[in-house]
Amino acid sequence: MTLALAVPAHAQAQDESLAMSSQPPEKFSFLIAYGKDECPEAQGDEIVVCAQEPEADRYRVPKELREELREEDNVGGGSWASKVEGYDDIARLSRPNSCSVVGTYGFTGCTSAMLRQWFAERRSTR
Image (cartoon, rainbow, N blue to C red; front, side, top):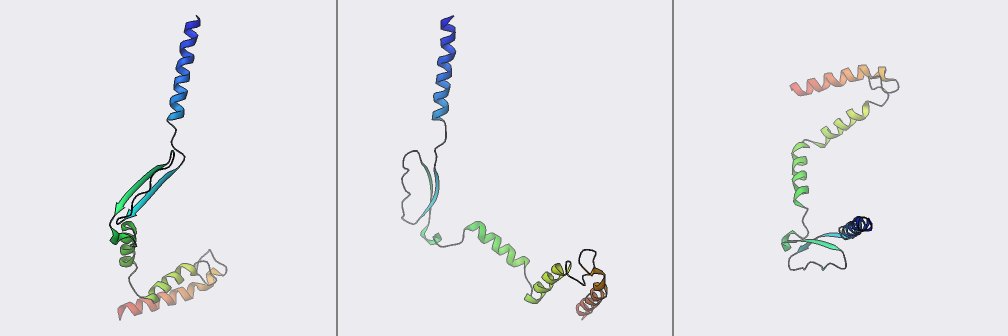
């Protein structure tokens, strides 16, 4: 009976030692070294992940961000006046004279909205 109790206790101690050794280290470092720069050495239980890139890429915007900038440039084409007009249309919804049920005095802007629409249609046909 004593032997039966000793075996599970020994197995439990072994499991605890495995659990203690399988815990991840406290510090991770993800670095990029450029040109001839060397990756730093890990100290203690630190894990260092280091990638080597060419010297020409040291001061460049990362590739993922460059792609996003190109897409925004294509989408945001047009004049500054058209961008301001778009922002003004968005902000107009919560202002007085908005022709909506949301803002204060919203009903008073319905005539202004119809006139803006008429002028926009007239500009587009010319």
